[in-house]
Length: 176
Image 1: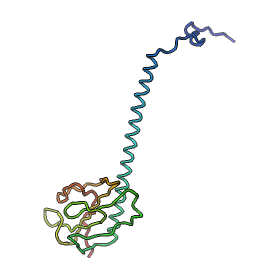
Image 2: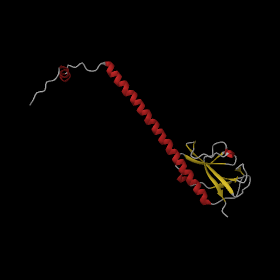
Image 3: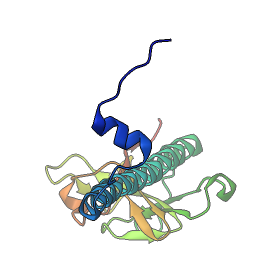
């Protein structure tokens, strides 16, 4: 075999006579690794938080859509109590733990644990709740998760200006 001659510097490294790293080089390396780790873990934390928030919104939207379909299947309720019709909620067994369904009354206030159909006046330019049933109702849902409102769709109707009405069944019309 042919013997390879090493330069003096390379020989020192392999023979153990190298001086090694200085303290400054080690500290700079530790600082860089620390900065990169902090950036990485803060990114992972933000990504995890975004995934949790997206999951909450997806469940809230699914609950709202299933509740509105459940109301549609009940049929139109023209019997008004205090100017509003009451509809059944989906069975609580189908609502995940920590979630709650609320509705919105004619004043735009969130009403807990009931689904309300509010008579609606579409004949005037005001487009707001009606004192009497004219054959059309508006049902609005607010989905809460751990007492925090989860927003999915926004209703910009000025009659419900408080901003709490998020998921609505527009124009729920009495079948003739």
